[in-house]
Length: 117
Image (tube, rainbow, N blue to C red; front, side):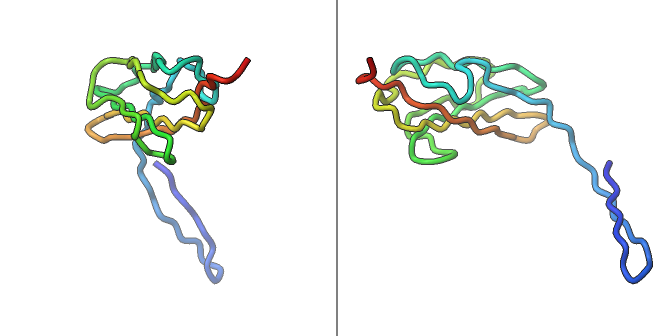
C-alpha cells in the first residue's frame, strides 16, 4: 500500500493506492542487449511466480512479433529459428501470466551479422 500526501492551501490531503507485487520473470540467455550468435537462438528465462509465458520476437519495433515466438506455454525456453543475419535491432517481449494478469518485459538484441569477421 502506498499513501501519497500533498499540501493544498495549508491543509494536508492524501490518497491511498494498492499495488500488486510482480515477481520478475527475466530472460537469462542470451544476455539482454547482446548480439545474437546465429539465426537460431535458444531463449531461456526464469520461472518466477508465473503460470504461463509467451515470447514475441520482432524487428519492426517494440512489441513486434514478425519473427514469431510462443503462445501461452509453461516452458521456460524457446528455440527461435530463421532470425535475420543482417545486424538489425531485434525486439523481444516476454509475457508472464501472474495471478491471472498478463505482464511483460521488453528486451533488445542485435541480430547476428553474417558479414562480420
